[in-house]
Length: 278
Image (cartoon, rainbow, N blue to C red):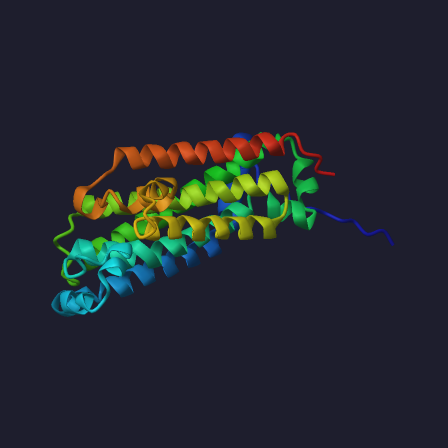
């Protein structure tokens, strides 16, 4: 008896052209996970934002019990105001860390997960270059991060009046959510670059986590260490310090995030194209 082994094609011909086949397939196969991430991040943002009415009444008094140096490090000097509360808790700690984890997890799947599992050889048997594979999957990451950012923004607008967050305009929420998207993409680019260069998913996750912790620590404690310049090396500086919840869109921060992402993906793609994948 002859056993015939069949493989699922890269993507159905009717679903996408060759130039976007990997991008479309990546988004389609990740749809459940993406919905879960979007729902989880948005739920956390909404839940913590809803506590603001209580914090606006007692936040100032509570923050006085925290040492001044720690208040400054955690950006808690104005926790009684809507921008101050959201900037120090919701968008200052919880949501960006979740977004960073999402970027790292998605970035690890660009090439490293398939290479480590042995599926990359099957994928590369299709008429696609290594560069196109990386760029299309990274484009899927960009679209996924953008989608999550849009969902968070819409959720913030939905609870804006009920949670007494009207001091923050829809445009200012949009600016903060854009920074959230760019932070996610930057850490996704880092994970993509590490994965393309090493081919090991564990290395990607460990390396991205280490950089994330170091970056957050540099941003938070640079002032206390007397090394203010160190904060400028952290993506969290460009994510938070322009105070988009007060000042709106930050062109310099947007440019820095875009440049960092391009460099990281380009470096990883260059290395991936020259590695022996056998």
